[in-house]
Amino acid sequence: MSPTDTPALRSLVLGSGGGGGVPQWNCNCRVCRLAWDGDPRVKRRTQSSLAVSADGESWLLLNASIDLREQILARPAMQPKGQGRHSPIAAALLTNTDVDHAAGLLALRERQPFTIWGTRATLDTIGANRIFDVVGRDIVPRRAVRLGERFEPLPGLTLELFAVPGKVPLWLEEGEVKTDEIGEGTVGVAVEAGGRRLVYAPGCAHVTDDLHARIAGAHALFFDGTLFTDDEMKRAGLGDKTSRRMGHQPVSGPGGTLETLSGHAGVRRILIHINNSNPILIEGSPEEQQVKAAGWEVAYDGMEVRP
Amino acid sequence: MSPTDTPALRSLVLGSGGGGGVPQWNCNCRVCRLAWDGDPRVKRRTQSSLAVSADGESWLLLNASIDLREQILARPAMQPKGQGRHSPIAAALLTNTDVDHAAGLLALRERQPFTIWGTRATLDTIGANRIFDVVGRDIVPRRAVRLGERFEPLPGLTLELFAVPGKVPLWLEEGEVKTDEIGEGTVGVAVEAGGRRLVYAPGCAHVTDDLHARIAGAHALFFDGTLFTDDEMKRAGLGDKTSRRMGHQPVSGPGGTLETLSGHAGVRRILIHINNSNPILIEGSPEEQQVKAAGWEVAYDGMEVRP
Image (cartoon, rainbow over all chains, first blue to last red; front, side, top):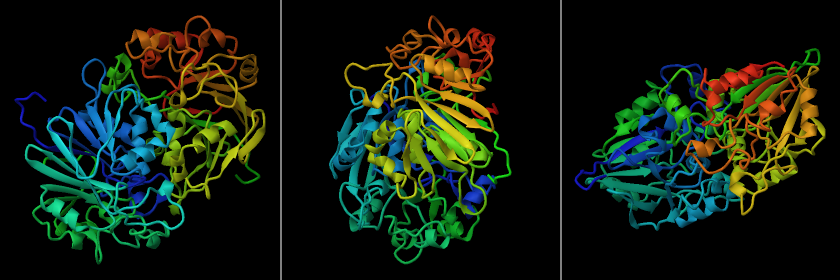
């Protein structure tokens, strides 16, 4: 960005689905069946990732989904310009180490300089898996940031990470799992450019006072839309875990997102990281209507938001 | 497969590209530029994976590419049938631990039973990366096989692994790298069903006498088509490594694949794992003509071969 340009916050949804995407590879639940059949009411969705930029030229990925190659092929803004090797993707930040948020780093090899950002805990967890060394540390530095520290991963784009309640990734679960730990393991992100601000929290076990305050100060919110009801997986015969056991506050019901965040009507509110079992993925369904009536939007791949 | 059915060997190319696919996320080389532009001479290609079956119902993946979710969505034979959770993918075998061959395991979570096969060395290398535990070991066993041992991962489908010269994966390279090691690190696969046989060797530093003998006894061969010339990466300004340094025998030139395997004219020969820089990806190019004139085919995504 040249110094005379005015930064303006832009965001582009690369993937709006939760783990597995829509449809999920091995699933014939109601939503997936419609998706496999090409029913126009259900959009196919890749896994959760949001790109943000202050100039529309260089972009920061908030999470790197395992579907990243496909996402780049689908979005001209993410594709190389000019001759030889190039990418508009200048940085990637992980909010946790779930496979759907982190495995996409493996798609960013081929000697392309960029920077990986995260908390020290996140970078250490990734660092313990040598397969990520395929993204050469000599040209792709990993930079740890502290919670509450303001930093500028790209010119004109200011970020701050903050703790949101969550749990260790599925692949590190052992014995009793604490589902609402507050620390460096699961974070939300406040992004600011040109005086506008968005908050991104694709995984959140419950809303803290701190998160309320941050949402109140934002123009747009991308929030955890994983499951609609707490017992959705059980009722669909897809698994034994509740939404809360998975570290995700359900969208509906007592203490759910619609209720908890109803006070933030002035903020543009968008659900993201939506699991394939979630009926809000069916356009026109009662659940989607309920979400819309409560003032929320449902993210889709390719959605552009300029807060 | 019911006992009265006659097994018949089938293979389906899920991905025909090398590491990065075509186009590659950060590349504007000649081939990638055409692919980005949608030029009909260059087919887009996902990363290398071959599915094989004896009954057309349950399938074994030979390598699991990071593009696996996209590949499943593109191929009805790989999609779930019936109600709830299901997958025709009943097993996956890794020929080495390159990211383009192994990272797709991360796409096969969601509590779906199948079996992962590989040499002890390959399973140990993967096992050292806890992120792969997202594919729960309790329902997805990992089974080591010895070189030269015949085994039946699916009813009616018999396999044998054999060493081909290769190197450690890029992400484990340290100091001086031996590029033509013979051991459990890089293997080829002989697949047999219904009296027909195919050999799959997507990475091969040079052709040994053993490999010659195996190809001579096969009906079809899928072979390493990574680079056309040894100095292709250098000449295109894409990197410093030669094809042989990367552990891949080049297609053309002295000691290249066309020359080395010219004696096997009776075998259906197909190049796979083709890097984005390789000019055989441009239909009608002199290099593609040369390959065809020598009796070879160029694999593409969705290609079906019944040897």
